[in-house]
Image 1 (spheres, rainbow, N blue to C red):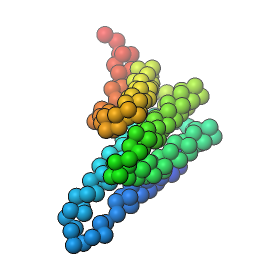
Image 2: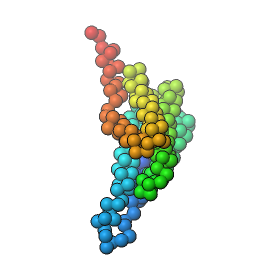
Image 3: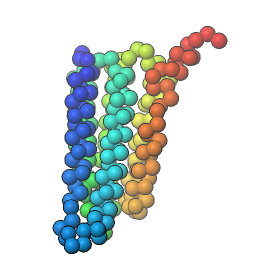
Image 4: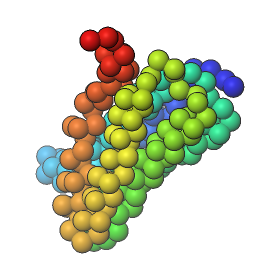
Length: 206
């Protein structure tokens, strides 16, 4: 068994690199004689950058929600977390693909599906890691059943939400992007019971 400190430090570094690489997709216009118009034409890149930065930030927040409640990690957790980071590192490519497809007005359905599938895979790995942490009894014992189920329910909902965006995006691409982006505000909100406060209240005599 290992302490989760090094895993979280390494993960934070990968998240930081991933969000930094996102901005590299935005290339300055070549025609400086019409610079304002050229900057305006880059709106698909701005959209992809903003959406993906906030999504990576959201994944980072929920990564901390999960590992803040972990007492120890085993080799399987290290491997699964590595797969999760590999998916996060792929996000700048899928973001660039989406922005280029919007700009070209071609291949948008495929680009939205690839973008959504990247996020869905990350969400699936969150669920796999959380299930293993529960099964292997690696969670902080202060986190009771209410908190465990509350966090697990939030992670499971992401699969349905992003999956819906992929399905809709395969037919109506922009609507799919809107659905995927729609869960951003909800997933930045705190999870009730994530620090075991409801379990503590339930244990107190009335």
